[in-house]
Length: 311
Image (tube, rainbow, N blue to C red; front, side, top):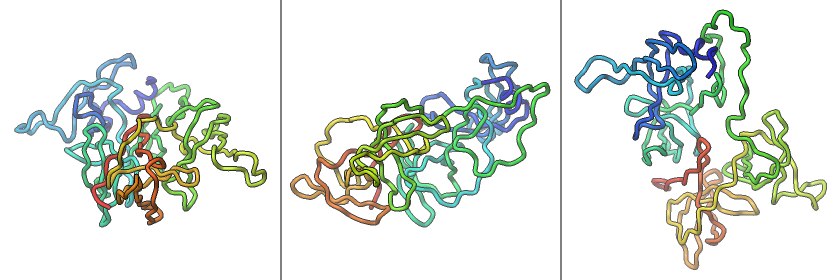
């Protein structure tokens, strides 16, 4: 972390969020204030005061602690978000802090089920108790804030260069890498297309070649297309053969050469399953061989999706 970023965002009195490396608290962020900033960027400790954590259950004094600089990030500006989508990464307010999770169910009446990878729990929240999950990367929020304000922290004196190194936060794919592509087109919600990376276009876009979609102009050639880096994820790893899927398990179903995210609604005879697709509000029947366990690519890690509480 550069000294410029330290000076801009972690000076005395700065509003921050603090992460924990303690077992059981990974993936959580707590609001705080910098009491004593680091002297430099060489691993010095930072004295902070938590806003919601006390020294003890019986104490009225806020907890103060020395933490590593890498455990800090600025407090993200508040955002008004009314709705969230299935599989969207969010932070949920729980036990006096923000916990990283993923939306696994839209229950209606402004209720959402959120799964926490760190604790393997699924809990329910309202929209006002959630926020879009973001990462602090090289002095910028990823994904970017919807509305960037003009209230940026003051800059240090003698700052010579305001530019910060760019990073493809999601991932870097080399030519020839097998990937899956998500489409933003209407009617393709929950669909993942197999493809191969042809070229990195160096503008957060990739030229990819689909494995099962052919070019309209020449139906002997596979379709090539430029896509945004955020539409890509690595090809899911093979987690072995699943002997039997159960009702309410999230699966990917292969239909017309495309993997569609759905939920098993009924186990039928002869190794067949009824699968419900929420986006299309449709139930179709599939052979066991056309299903795979649904996995989510979260923070550069694969997570097997939990069962949905109800259909």
